[in-house]
Length: 158
Length: 145
Image (cartoon, rainbow over all chains, first blue to last red; front, side, top):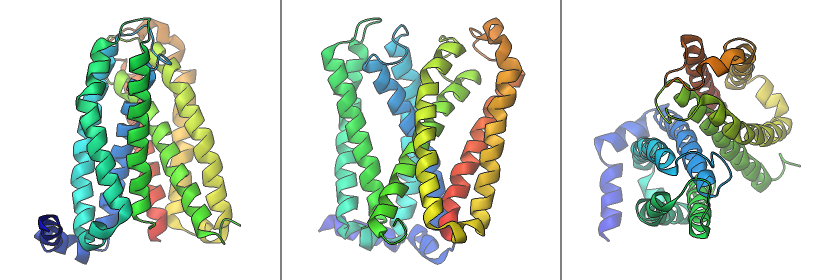
């Protein structure tokens, strides 16, 4: 399959060779991945709690969605780069890992949701009134991102 | 019990990682606001009031799960240099809000609506972001020693 070939190419790339040979390469990539995770988690949580009407109810959801959305995307970029570095060290193992496959599927779902229905929920939000649809969007968003995190943690364990 | 069960250790560890995300992610939102990077039109106190419950909940969970992990491997952890570094960073990161709240935050009503907080508050924000990052980095390094 072409995906498997792509994973093997990554493992045999200069990045893959560097990561496999270096003692601290994986650790550093993991640390960067975790630092960006904190920002991602914080920004997603604050936006979704606003959509749920739990915090910052009187403040503009558009402003919160815009500013924290940038933080979400910024940390996602860092996570993708550090993630690719970690993947290059053990691409063969990850390709067959059920946790990795689940994480990628959930990540795709979370991203798709983030840029479509979730974005629409933020645009629809009003000050002082919480819409049922927005609550559902916030809960689904939190569940999707939590799923990405938990299945990601499982890659190293399974 | 925790040491003998690999699954239990992994589950507590995962809870530890996720709750640290709550602590650091929520406090980073406040720090970035004080630095004038995000949510500038919203007063600092309103953001502080909103994020502190998240921070404290996350802290309670990460402290108890962290204590369980330590208990399972106490002898090993005690002599681990990364663990010692993490404790030092944690002590410093606790000192920072103590100083912040007893000094510049006392007069927060004079500057809460400013888009850019006064320099002492910005210094506290930078210290908080740096020290929490150090806690995460040292924490991850425990597994490598």
